[in-house]
Image (tube, rainbow, N blue to C red; front, side):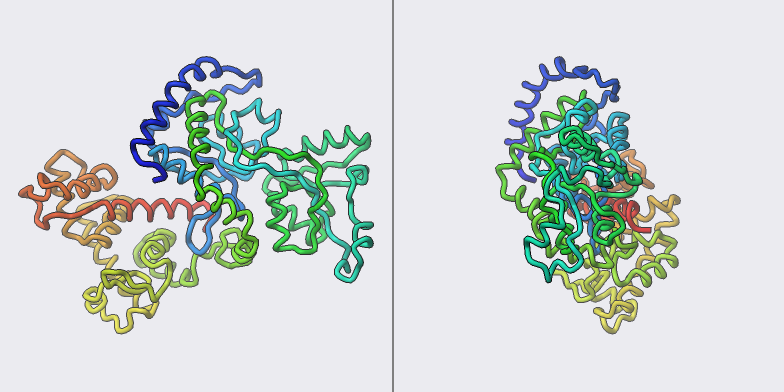
Length: 479
């Protein structure tokens, strides 16, 4: 959490006071023809979840070595903490479709590298900007540029917008680049041939095409182009084609309370070093960018999560689980490090306790094959136990994971409490989970149906939720 509870409450009061008038004045302040759904912050709070629409690239949102990452991913999670809601990410490649999804209620926030333009401002309401960048022309340097003098290189590159007359520039479909190039074409009094790429093509993929010689020119925001240059030193990105422009997120035009609350959060975040560290992590650290984009464990390069994927898939079949759930569990336990050891003495990929390792015949707990085999056998035993009590497999997996984390006895207690206090003993979230959390209270751990005493269930609740949240991320990227 970025702020203590008192600061949060104060900020909410400020937001509500000055947003009430804004809601009345601005709700329908648009002649754009868009009719966004009525789903402002109060309804988001009631639902308990913020749905963020974002793009899939090497800086906004991606999976790397099993972990969801990205500039927007990290910031939106901090925003959700501030709003005290959960967060769900939905990935969409087509920017125009993002706007439609937002206004139709499929998301609450577009958290993406959006250039603020007049045309877009008719469709959505932009937050305070996160940064300022310029649009630049991406072109190839001459083939033998390393052996040429600077003036010889410059002579072969486009350095003036006038030189774009008659040239063909490929751009991302529905991007702000189209509007800028049309305006530039009018300004210079000559035609620039603009080709909008297939909707699945991103700015980064178009830069790839320039680097490979498939196309000659594209347009990019400068911060994105600078990252790509770390991969492709043969491209030139120094020719500016726009003035500085704001980059921001967007909400529905009638989500006035959400907009002003996010703006309060942005202003507070700007006072935190963490805000600038996150930006540098994804947009300034070119070496890290190059390492992850060249890695086989970067989700845009394929469907690998770890070097143990084949083994995990094999064992997941034995369990009857989606292999990505098992991979998420192993990441949670050890981040795929076979030498990992916890403070409690658990070791290896699946963090086996010494007694469990001995029970299942493990001779070398750091051996990935032995460790995984023992962990899978224990999961199979737990799954067979819970089959008698939880019929639905998706629910049963949650019971298995919780038992793996805290022990079978405490989950049995929580189930008995759920039965006694009119909860659903076959449903995890808000039912058995709720009573596991209650086992830290005297009334419940002293209840006659409780046989295993006190338990601090917060860690287990978080454990199950994080495994499933990560699994949802894997579903979007990993096949």
